[in-house]
Amino acid sequence: MNYNQALEYIHSVEWLGSRPGLSRTQELLSKLGNPQEGVKFVHVAGTNGKGSTCAMLNSVLMQAGYRVGLYTSPYIVRFNERMCINGEPISDTELADLVEIIKPIADGMEDKPTEFEIITALAFLYFKKHCCDIVVLEVGMGGRLDSTNVIDSPVASVITGVAIDHTSVLGNTVEKIAFEKAGIIKYKRPVVYGGRDDTAGKVLYDVSIEKHAWFYRTNLNKLSIKSADINGTVFDYCDYKDVKISLLGTYQPENAATVIETVGVLNENGFKISDSDLRQGLACAKWRARFELLSNEPPVIFDGSHNIQGVTAAAESIKHFFGGERVALLMGVLADKDYEDMADILSSVADKVFAVTPDSPRALSSTELAKTFSSLGVEAMGYETVFNGVEAAYEYAKTQNIPLVMLGSLYMYGEVYNSFQKTANKRV
Image (tube, rainbow, N blue to C red; front, side, top):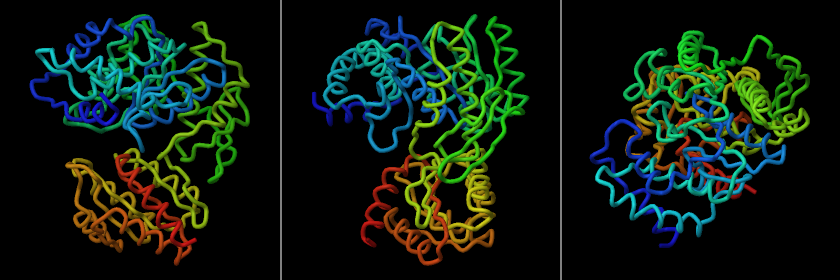
């Protein structure tokens, strides 16, 4: 089996015959020798912020000299990004070799595993094979029934925040969604909550008490931003002064504070991460597509925000970094998102909207998205291709000398990024 055949197999797996629960993942892993056992994990869930939190924690642990596995989703440019060791994605050859091991076992199961379950098993095999000291493991969706939740005793569980999203699967209230995310809390294992929502915090605390788990909460009242621009942010948190992060977005210091709390928990559980390791790891952490600066003149930003909480944070960041200046906005969104509310939020910062259609069967058409913005009094136009939209948006931003912000779906990043590079290079 070669790399392309391996990816074709992974993406061809159907959900037929599946049922909620962890039984398929557990059966598959059992037949693979339970590669997740004996591996140390930090398990990270949350509606927003979990990817950035994973990236910063991964960077800190690497800075401290540990061999660190990182499992995230979705990938941004290339599938292999979903599983990395010390910042390096799995190689094409090794991915194909591991899929070749998994395929006959998965195909032989009466209740076939899903695509995500196969990818999770693949990652566990990879991390076990390479003897990772610790794995930063991001939940795919929810927590309680997510296939990553087969691990028994993580070093720590982290829940970055809870908000309304994926309501058809997780529930339509904060309490229900918090309960699903609380599913990663394990018996007598510490949990860190980094969110602002007290209702969610109460649910998580109650589950922690039931499971005799130590509950830690990020104290956002002790977070103070000292400076923040498109070159980075400096903040104080509790006893930590002048902490620097390069990740942009007004929400990133809160994620960094959650990482600081988590590092404290790790140090209480046998790890040795110095203050210098923590500061340097936070300062050099990178995470693509999260209010990522692609160009300076004019400023061009890509942000993967794709729900109400994320879009609200993006709008706040736009207002903060650009001083109330309206921006050119390129946007594509999935039809099952609250796109009308998203458009309402973004209408306060958008000078003109360039609507595109993401490459997904769930995508909202660019025409419909443009109509939504137009109904809010914002000039908007739909484009047939992402390239055409990016080209027009960048030209407009250059002409008007205003920032360009591109957002709405992580799935657009690769196409938007490549389109932007082609467009920018044409002008050089």
